[in-house]
Length: 372
Ligand SMILES: C[S@@+](CC[C@H](N)C(=O)[O-])C[C@H]1O[C@@H](n2cnc3c(N)ncnc32)[C@H](O)[C@@H]1O
Image 1 (cartoon, rainbow, N blue to C red):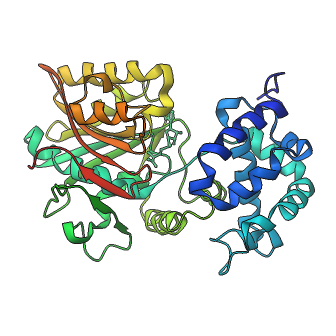
Image 2: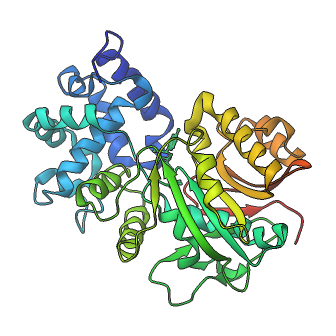
């Protein structure tokens, strides 16, 4: 990407100031401490110029540093990252080492910043949309489903039937001996319905504009580097799920969510119920979001299908038609959750069921639909 006049140090500072105010303090004490001093350090901020603001240049800078550190865990700066050391050092002491490391690796960091996009894959989100996917065979009247996952990243969410789920007192689901175990806190009065057995997925394919190959060490290192330090089990879960996926990686087609979706829907054998999943993808579709929903609705007129969407309140479509509990949430001004919705798309039109709200990374779920 060619630098333009408006993607310089000031843009990085503006984006960083937003993150430092709204996101880092509660989510990453290390990034909060680094950001406090980085905001006034033009020389280091200059390493993150040349990319547009919506690519989040300071996030790319922080991820680039982590990407290099993961490959060099004996660097003194690694001692501040909880996933790279047993006893992380206090975040307040990190900045001088961060600055020295960043300037020493300036060329490599700028090259990474300008060639990569922040990329994540949160396997724990499966715990929040699995109960919705489990409703699909019943809703479509088919014994097995064909899964078409859009915005798959490394495809970890496509393997949702391979994981064991622990919902505490609300119960468990999935194969008990699975190597990946997802723990999700259940909130509220009504537990999510848990199927005795995972839905039978007889066909699965993913679609992503930038798929991550789980067998590519550099691509998966970047995926890990994009996770903020100090976020509990996120990195451990990611590494465990990547390891499990390497044995039999899911197929992910490189392409665009709108342009390439119809061909993948047509691939699903006729005896299977089509289940489309999108997990934190609508948020990124921007102006394509309406076209994506329209493409699915059009496909549903030809063949009944289900769409399970897990997304932010900014990203999910048709929020203006959601039930009162969603509207009350929006009106509260304190939206701190994602939403889970099951849509049935048929010749008769589209029917949305707003099922649950949950933590952004799948940490908790509150089932809001009537008991099933
Ligand atoms: C925030 S990640 C979510 C990944 C995964 N679904 C999850 O929940 O962990 C968004 C994904 O959507 C993909 N994406 C964004 N816009 C896209 C588009 N127009 N077409 C296809 N994939 C897209 C990105 O490459 C990225 O992998």
